[in-house]
Amino acid sequence: MTAVNPHYLKLQGSYLFSTIAQKVSAYKTAHPDEEVISLGIGDVSQPLAPAVVEALQHACEEMGRAETFRGYGPEQGYAFLRQAIAQGDYISRGVSVSADEIFVSDGAKSDVANFQELFDQTICVALQDPVYPVYLDTNVMAGRTGAYHNGRYGGIVYLPCTEENHFVPQLPREHVDVIYLCSPNNPTGTALTKNDLQQWVDYAREHQSLILYDSAYEAYITQADIPHSIYEIPGARQVAVEFRSFSKTAGFTGTRCAYCVVPQEVSVTAPDGTSVALHQLWLRRQTTKFNGVPYIVQRGAEAVYSPQGRAQTQAIIRSYQQNARVISQALRRAGLEAYGAENAPYIWLKTPGGLDSWSFFDKLLTEARVVGTPGVGFGACGEGYFRLTAFNTPEKTKTAAARIAAMTF
Image 1 (cartoon, rainbow, N blue to C red):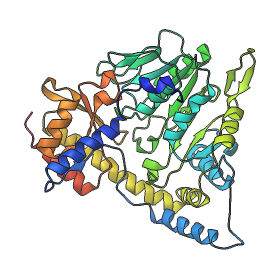
Image 2: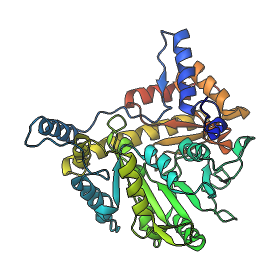
Image 3: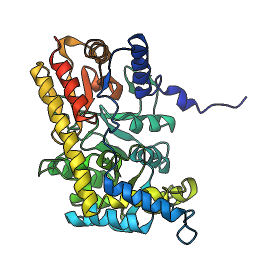
């Protein structure tokens, strides 16, 4: 009989959002006449921008003509999209990133999950708590953790993000090799300031560590002192890889397109002590394991950077930002403590009356017919908290917010 990878057996139960889906399905089966509104999983509700749809349609027509048909494309992405990303997301902001440092993919989740393959099994990993599950679970699968006990895995350096530290991770006292940071953060909605990020970059440079920086929600930043890219911070190009996605900025959750930036300066250490360019390792990984994002999808992503695409996608983002404000205001009317919403499409609330996260999930589902995400699903420090998202339609968001505001806590 074939032996299983034993590290998969360390994973705790089913994936968080699978558990939520099962509980919601059971409730809907028992109450078929009730409308359940989801403010849980971060899927978008608004359709693709017209400029994106037009580009997709035109690309489809190209694929139907012999003279413009395309087969396999470059694994790291077509030049037209990489150049649009470099100009639209970085150079236009005064940030130095070149097109050849950009790798187009089918999702930031995939990139973050796969990137850890480049590192030795013995590295020390630090991550925020609470945290998006993929950062932790993929390192568990890779065998970098010990046993699971009291909500945490041995061998991982957890960076508590609590009400006391305003949900901002503090620098570790010990040496760590790889640091996962997400800003604006999923699930807490907290965004790191330039000063916050400078401390992390300085730490990474001093300890020769690597920062894996997830900025998938940067388009939701409203405050001027919040950087949109870690490369706005001096020294970051030597110690950081950045991940971004078109999912929440342009509605590509079902279309699938994202990218990561691997600067030429970032290096890691080989067994003989020599330095190896991380860029070349990731290129080798991608060309071996990935055949690239479809041409049609990449043309759609390119359209996001056109004047029309910019205006249309920004209007959609403003709609979700308004949803976040509606939810946040409703929570406060209900007497609940709520965080986030200002720079992120997530609202992080403190569960009332000593309820644990899953008990609050059940209460919200049965009394308000609203679905959210239990904070404990993101880590031990998430117990006693709950995440709501702003990605439903304005109408359903207002209805859900009114239901929550009418609840008794």
